Amino acid sequence: MKATLFKEVSYSLSKLIEDIDVGEIGLPDIQRPFVWTKAKVRDLFDSMYNGFPVGYLLFWGNAGVNGARQIGTGGKQAVPRLLIVDGQQRLTSLYAVLKGLPVIDDDYAATRINIAFRPRDRHFAVPDAAVERDPEYIADISQLWVGPVSRNRFVRQFLERLGDSRELTEAEEDDLTEAIDRLYDLQSYPFTALELSSTIDEEKVAEVFVRINSKGVALNQADFILTLMSVWWDDGRAQLEEFSRTARQPSTAGPSSFNHFIQPDPDQMLRAAVGLGFRRGQLRAVYSLLRGRDLDTGRVDVEQRDAQFALLQTAQAYALDLTNWHEFLKVLVRAGFRSEGMISSQNAVLYAYVLYLVGKRDFAVPIETLREIVARWFFMAALTGRYSSSPESQIESDLARLRGAVVTEDFVRTLDGVVDDTLTADYWQITLPNALATSAARSPSLFAYYAALNLLDARVLLSRMRVSELLDPAVRSKRAALERHHLFPRAYLRRIGVESLAQVNQIANFAFVEWPKNTAIADDAPATYWPAFAASFDAEELERMRFWHALPKGWHNLRYDMFLDVRRRLIAEVVRAGFERLKEPSMTSPGLIER
Image 1: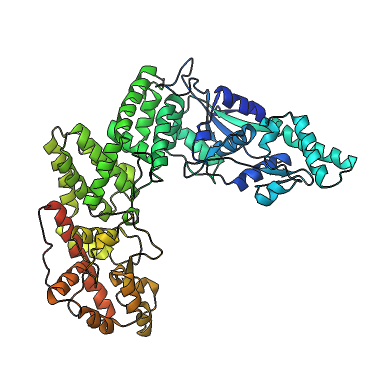
Image 2: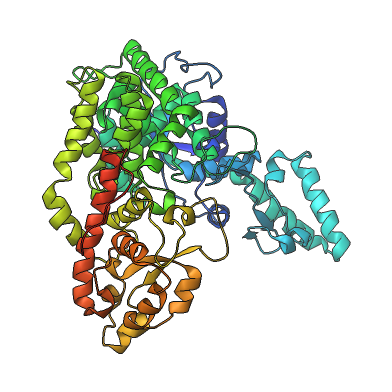
């Protein structure tokens, strides 16, 4: 019989809490975003109270901790013997409630998990205003374990408050006391933990996790690296989380990572640091290096681990530098993108940032030159969905292209070469028009068209306002200043027998208009509304408008299917013209294409 990968160990809840407190068990999640709802925590306590099993815990032995301490200063000094692989949310819930500590929510704000208990019928609840006023409830069960008074005094005070509202019999007081004592004794609730050997690798740990927890979220290499950081460099993980937290809300107290493009999670910024520090996109090899594990012998080398963490520390500091971050965000603006609403792939943003950092730090590319190069790269990557499938493998391949590069010119030549090889004549004339044959509201090709309109300084259809002016993410109102208008209105298409939403909502049937115009056009046929509105503009303005909005001559009289086919090809030409602006920044006009 093959040796098992684990041993089974029994814990009481109080022992788990104690081991977390002294650092035997690593529970970083008490300061990490907590994803369980309070209702789920309530149900956990209800199950435990009623004696139901609440699942296994899965721990992984941490090799090489003998007397070890964390890297850096200001962090925890003890290195945990066991790492939590499965059960983090359960343990975080229990630890936070029994210790009366706040957790961090999805917006990185501190919040308490208050659970209420009604001893009369042993009912648990998430407290609201009514529950908090009801003397039948213990409004916050944390007070039973960490409150200012002893358990016996707590019970007496509860009975006194309840007695002030209604008469209690002696038998009822005994019953209520027993119910509260049973709640207090949950600290003795038994848990079974499976402790995986420290000798097995992360791939096997992930496989075990999936096999025993098929409903959970599969672990990835970023999860393992973040766990390692919790053990060996907790300050580093905290820095990633602080960066993510400040990216979610405007700062009123100085510089922050907040922006209108992306609200990165810690694992995403970790990938940026790893890409810069190790020139790797796939994290598996980096994880092994950070463990200090010799790939041949399997033994842990402390010096190797410290050296690799030093590389990560340096790269992460550079990636989280706010000057670098905000200079990079100018790249997105230069590429014609204005807000998160135009970003179809966060990977494209993050990996463009990796290349920006590599170009700035390792190849000393001047900032203005770097901005132009990476703007072209990002436009290409966003347009083609470069990082939509197997993103780690793709950025690994892209970074590998730079291994032979030495000087600034090598970096520039490599990136521009990939862009040129991707955006060929066939791409513009065949691939892109075909990609536009969709009704998807968040199509990469559609957002690239919007970006091209910004780059071409285009005006809104039937307006003298610029598209870029009305796409300003800082301006918010009850109704969007700019709306997507059906050039062939839905009701009109229904009247002529076109009812499929996949046809009605084709990308090629939409154009940007200001909302008053959208309202005024209503359900009129193009042949009716276009001549009336077009009369307000001179011939030159109309010609530019037709170019920007990819409208063929006489479009309002075309058959709908023919209109869609022609307009897709014209949109592709506009996207190409916008991209050419990035290749030739000195251009001052888009030129007009005969239609």
